[in-house]
Image 1: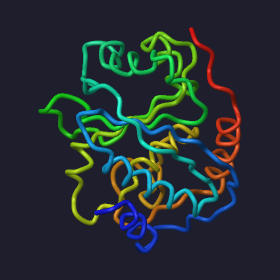
Image 2: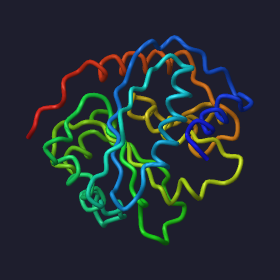
Image 3: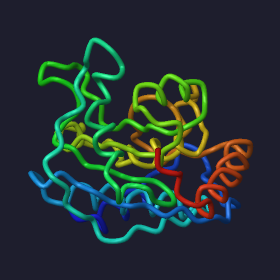
Image 4: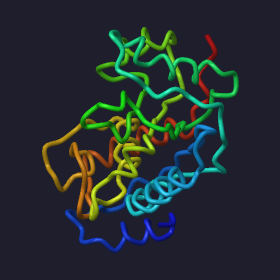
Length: 220
C-alpha cells in the first residue's frame, strides 16, 4: 500500500475524537533507513504522520530518505547503555546533528523472540528519563530520534491505523502516555482516528516551535 493510500485511509477513518487544529508550527524531519531495507515502509509512516499532524496544524517537513550503513537492531541489553549502543553509534556520526527530529527505520528492535516487539521508540533530551538517557548515550544533548521497526510495522493487525510515527513524535514533543483510547498518546494501536486535548496541542505547539527553529545541538 502506498503512502498516499495510507494517508487517505487515516484521513477517512471514523474519528475517535476531534483532532482540531491550532498548533500552527513546523517540524523538520531527517529520514534515514538501514541500507538492508528499502525506504517504502518509512515513507508510508511519514506520509501518514504528515497527514495526521497537518490536521492538528503541525507541518512536518521531510526530505528524501537516505540510506545509512546497516544498523544493528536495538537489543535488550543488561544495561541501558548496551541496549542503546546502536543509537549511540548513529548519533555520533558527524552529519547527525540536525534541526527537528531524526526518523530512522531499522529492520527490527529487540531480539527475534521479543513479545511484543516495539513498533517505535523515541529518544529525546529532557523529560523524566533525560539524565539516564544522556548517560547511556554519552551525550548531554542530541537531536531527538525516533526509531521504527520495519518487522513490527509489517506485522500490524488488519484494521489498525498507521499512527506509530505520529505517536512517537508526540513523545518527542513533550507528551506522555494517557489512558484515553481515543487519544493519540494512548499506548497501543488505534482503529479509529485519534485526537489530542487542547492542553496537549498547546504543549506541542510550544515545543515544535522551539525544535523547529533551534540550532543543532553542540558536538561533544
